[in-house]
Length: 122
Image (cartoon, rainbow, N blue to C red; front, side, top):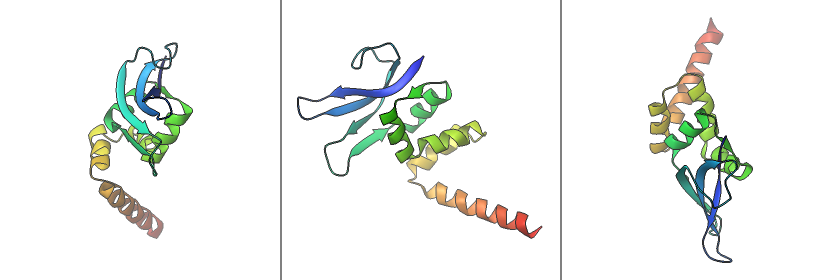
């Protein structure tokens, strides 16, 4: 079983983390399958970057995120996009949405509101 979790980097008192896909039985900083991002808790606000396409891929094949990574994925919106991927939306569209900074999200929400308005009128 695979898990998406944090792997600690940095020196003593200055932690930074890599977000990695690894086997459940591997050590915290042990062998990894793939590195998909980073997380730096020190600056205010915190910095993190997760490769959306790779995260969606690993989540779709059954990798389970740790609690800390799950919070980061929720903050980035990846878990919501995973549900839409499972509902049948193409992966390319979801990744383009992240790259365009949410402009596609606003258009999708507006489109959904129009569809609900039309359904309510009928």
